[in-house]
Amino acid sequence: MQDINKVLETLHPLERKVFPILDKYSSFEEIVKHSKLEEIEVLRALQWLQNKKLIILKTEVKEMLSLGRNGEEYKKNKLPERRMLEALEHGSRSMEELISSGKVRKEEANVCIGMLKMKGAVEIEKGNDGLGLNITEEGKKLVNSRLDEEKILDKNLPIDVKKLTEHEKKTMKDMLRRKELIALELVKLREAVLTESGRKAIKSGISTEEVLDRVTPEILKSGEWRDKKFRSYDIKAPVAKVFGGRRHFMNEAIEYVKKIWMDLGFKEMSGNIVQSSFWNFDALFTAQDHPAREMQDTFFIKEPKLAKLPGRYADKELIKRLKDTHEYGWKTGSKGWDYKWSIEEAQKNVLRTHTTVLSAQTLAGLKEEDLPAKFFSIGTVFRNETLDWSHLFEFHQTDCIVVDPNANFKHLLGYLKEFFRKMGYEKVRVRPAYFPYTEPSVEVEVFHPVHKKWIELGGAGIFRPEVVMPLLGKDIPVLAWGLGFGRIISEYYNITDIRELYKNDLKQIREAKAWLR
Image 1 (cartoon, rainbow, N blue to C red):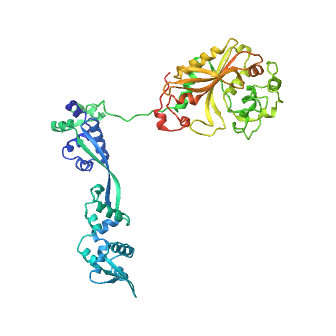
Image 2 (cartoon, rainbow, N blue to C red; image 1 turned 180 degrees about the vertical axis):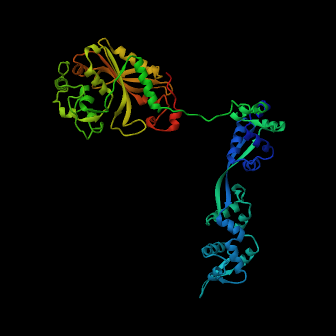
Image 3 (cartoon, helix red, strand yellow; image 1 turned 30 degrees about the vertical axis):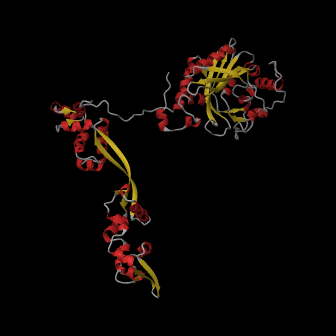
């Protein structure tokens, strides 16, 4: 049981004005009226009192029937059909006479006739002077009784629709068809109900002594604070969340992964997103007739369409070695692709389809004194994919190479297991696969701890001599892997639609988990 006196000491000035009133009044409107506070001030006070478990704030949405603009007028000056009945009580009248006498307005006439005809109260006759109206016996009875519509208007509106009878609800539906006669609206009704603790607190009495809510320079200067009582701090009071500045969670994840690679001794590779086919495909021993080089898989650049070769790393000797490797295998021990290699095909500019292009460029720029060496990259790549929950046409990929004469397949597995362990995956396995530029080649899979199944997250292997020798000048082991960055981190954020990784949703950004370093 909470200490009532301690709770009362924490009451805010607004709560002190509202709380005593709750002994007599419970509806929000009555509390506002008797507290003489603004609605927002009363609402805050009630929410704070509820947090202190002194009240229960109940909210109910009700469908209320209220008067429309015409309904207010007719309540004062009678319904037009009532005025028409009274005018016909002493004999038949033409429509022109009724309108000119002011009994009904022209725009009301047709509605009135329709309503009274439905009730069997009038009959229409065609005469030389136009339409004439006669009152029936049923109409004469209605002159001395209340119409169903009048009974609705007689009620103390607005009123809860649930309080109407079935017959009244039917009348209400008919009245709703008429212009601005009545209206339906959803109203949120609030009620403050005292809890047992609240009732005890009210009985114990709330001190009327002025309680200071804050310390000001004036109070400190005058020394007035010595004779005043201060409100106690309520350390359990809920406060609004404060969101400081934060980077997009995708960028946070990129920085986290960069730190993993750098902690493992890797240096970062960088390069352009627009690359020549020479670097994107040919340097990685991808045949010029390979399906990946078709427009349905790759974005080709319209202007400039062709790159200038040799480029940043390439020279004529490199181009010749690569050409010979494709055509007959050069000195690699391979037969190559057994076709005539086209430099024009190699010059075609593309949006890079993988960050492995950076690995090829890095190898081409290495010297003997740079070895052994380890490099990584994280960057945007592009594929001509149909956008859906599991595919993007623009996404991130992380690539790594280890260039070391002593490197072997076990080292490759070790790096992959260590990386995925730091990403939260304890179980990692590889299975045989095929990639044009690695041999052996494997697909990397991790065991999902929640879904209890293996999921594929990337490809890895050792670069073939056909890749290494033209670029580096000699054949030494180069461990290589490329991993689908988005798929790796989406599990951490519990994202099932990969498109959500790139949304600018402030709520999502604020609530996204941080990466633990």
